[in-house]
Image 1 (tube, one colour):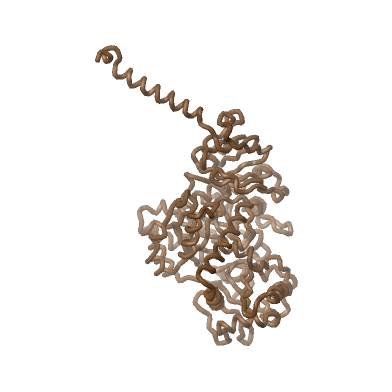
Image 2 (spheres, rainbow, N blue to C red; image 1 turned 90 degrees about the horizontal axis):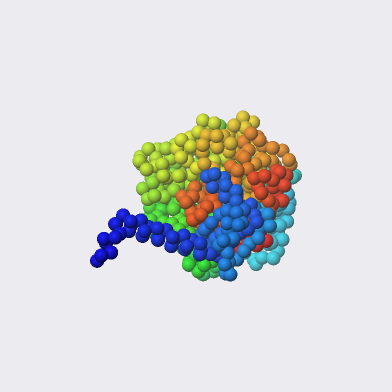
Length: 575
């Protein structure tokens, strides 16, 4: 062929490269978007904290970010255009610690969070019992003895006696969960079903509250809850399997609707059984899961050992379901005096809280997780619980060369000894905290811990950030309302309902607070490469707000509303 005489091989290679580049360029210019957002303030939360005014989405992915003029190039006849009219778009909010089925059940069962005193609780429960069948269980959640006014006349450490409740509900067993979920209140009918008497001993990791004569008053803390809840589970098992499954599906659907209306696109579910995962996976297959779930398994050691691997899942159903974490409990809650402390409670010097899971069991599960590439997420609220959790993590990490990739978490990390604060960053442990707990619990924190412990280690966000720790943020719903705006407000103001500021030196900056709700949550689930910021190539999960949380005055933050929630490029909620 004479052709080779006139064109050198290098020239031919350059020509081919030029043609490929030209074709690619033409292809890019011909790309069109499925959805475009214009005329807004796009807070990307990328590494440069870029602010843009428009973006384009193709299918479920962000394809371009820039000025209105730049993004208009991607418009075609089939493109949906969303005019933000000056509203603010942020990365889809990540709820980093809450309870999916519990959040849904809170929409079904009695909500006692707003009950101002014990009399109101009794009234609400008795009204429900009047409308219930004989023997039907009455279930509720949200009471908190520290927030009642007045304090019940007859009480043990602020907890009322069951008498009034039992008199009002003689035909129905009652189980009412504390707002924290770490104690329950039962009436006489429920205690009779569980054969609870003055002779019933405290189980390991639990406590039955009794009066001065040794009689149970109706309050069961931590693992003692099971004495009552097992009776309720027997009642539920009288239903068919399909009925039980449909009840859970209903709760999950309600929880997802609640998430979408609050701008939440991803949800870290802090404790799910194998059965829960099977149901969720079925719902994913049927396109019923509209948000992205990151599941923490809550099962005993033997069950985990036997079945852990078969449930491990990453990005299932187009990134709707990931299962690669295990939930553990080291202690209880501060409000019920179940948080495990290094020194006694200031308002109850004979108590230091409870270790609710044997540290030997926690060590065994930690080793199992490390060997099977699972993340550990340990509930630890008290300073002793946090220290021992960090100790166990450090012991486990020292046995594994790849521990830097573990990203193990401490859920809550509410009260930390000063000496342990730097250890989070040193060990690469993530503090999975809930800023709303600070302002909600503040009225009783100093009473429980005393001034020094409250000031130096309670909800120590700024201290953790200054020590380079990663904090992700959630609401712990149904413990608190699943409201990320209120959560953000608590992080940047630490202001309680009565206007007092709880140790303001621990406030987060607006940008740091926003990161805890977005990119840090993605990092805490190994997903920072696909979500958590608005960047080209990442999933198009976006929350659109009425206000700019980075610049708005503090006193206007709570007026902010969610206007749109976009998941995978689809508008799934519009206000």
